[in-house]
Amino acid sequence: MFMKTHRRPIRSLDDRFHEVMTAHVNSAAYKIKAPLKRMSEDFRRSRDKTKNVCIEEKCPVDDDGNEIMIKVEGLCKIYGKHPEEALRLLEKGADKKEVQERTSNNVGLYDVSLNVRKGEIFVIIGLSGSGKSTLERCMNRLIEPTSGRILIAGIDITSLNEEELRYVRQKSMSMVFQNFGLLPHRDVKSNVAYGLEIQGIPEKERLEKSQVSIDRVGLSGYEDSYPKDLSGGMKQRVGLARALATDPDILFMDEAFSALDPLIRNDMQEELQKIQSDLNKTIVFVTHDLDEALKLGDRIALMKDGRIVQMGTPEEILRNPADEYVSRFTKKVDRTKVFNAEAFMKKPRNVIHDTQGPRAAMKIMESTDRSNLLVVDRSNRLVGMVGSDDIMNAICSDKTLEDVIEREIPKVRRDTPMKEVIQIMVTTDFSIPVVDDDGILIGVVSPSATAEALNGGDL
Ligand SMILES: Nc1ncnc2c1ncn2[C@@H]1O[C@H](COP(=O)(O)OP(=O)(O)OP(=O)(O)O)[C@@H](O)[C@H]1O
Ligand SMILES: [Mg+2]
Image: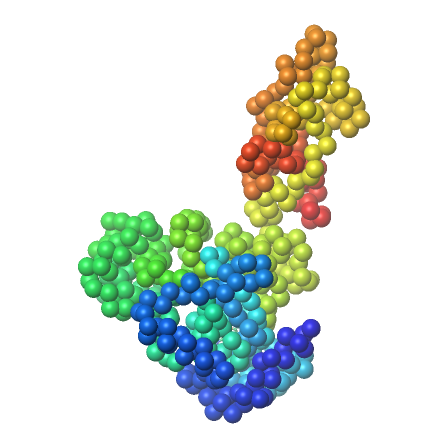
């Protein structure tokens, strides 16, 4: 399998690239040639036809029906003078360290393939030097890949010339940097409007658009301030507003919140989540902070030595770490922040219908060894709960089950974070029912299963 995924870039290298690579590998003009040229021509033609090339319309769809905004195929980036030699060693199984020792080339990326779905926050995480920034910057070709392909909404950007690349970047991409990247001699509104200015948007329109963006990030009232008068958090809000002002399809963020102190960082993460729920951009977010990755990421790619060691949702990664490295990497994570009730929920066993009588309830309690029963109606909608004392009371005073049901009981949804479920759990001594949007009982979260799972047992 390893050989299979790797064969394509190497074959490309041998058959078609070798000449080009040796001549151009260190040149910004280096690009991959036919048959990708055809795509570039298609793109140019469509752009000529209309100035409004809307790349969203071109997103291909994967087998599961997800629209793919960014597709990375067999991407390699070797820093140094002899990339072909480094790639051959890597193909034979050498690691980054060995390649460095034997060729003095630095492996930035090796054989990276992934899809970023339209509208998701895709987080790239890993230790320093693992290749996060290289991968993100290859996606917008701020760094030229050594081999492999990057398709943005189906357009192979490794095949575009500089003018086309600039067009796609301006139209569809924005970047937010760790060090804010603000222009010191410009005020907030003019910093935010900068991308629109480059696009040649008339002043009135760009100021209107930048005001929308400034309001969105909570900086109203600071339009005339200069960067030197702003705190770190405010500067990054300006960075974010500037990135959003051009209404890009893709937002690239490289350690954008890493320089902020923890409380401000938390605010910015929440701000980004809020903005994302309004705007639904495709965001590629680089961080070395696992909590941040788990909080923000719809999916996460964990990198090591230029390769992706695991990719998946936060839950998938915590549930099934691909190897020892991932297990160690994720060991200290607060799992209650990541998992929701659904991950812990079990089929409810202590259930009775509201039409049944107290004696039937007593029998179920005895057979299940429970002192509480959840009561549901004919449609399995949760009605409430009865305890053994209530049942005894009903039997002794000739009441129906309905007379003794406790109707105001705590319940959660399948997407309630476990942190909240646990807060409820400590105030009760029974399993917490989980209901769907129609109030139908779909499961229970028990204190014992929760304690076991949070201590590292199987979920
Ligand atoms: N311009 C360059 N020249 C040579 N090697 C480079 C260059 N840029 C990056 N590298 C190397 O490529 C590898 C990946 O670097 P990259 O900056 O992508 O890592 P990173 O995961 O973003 O790290 P950090 O968390 O420190 O930002 C590292 O070994 C780095 O030393
Ligand atoms: Mg980096």
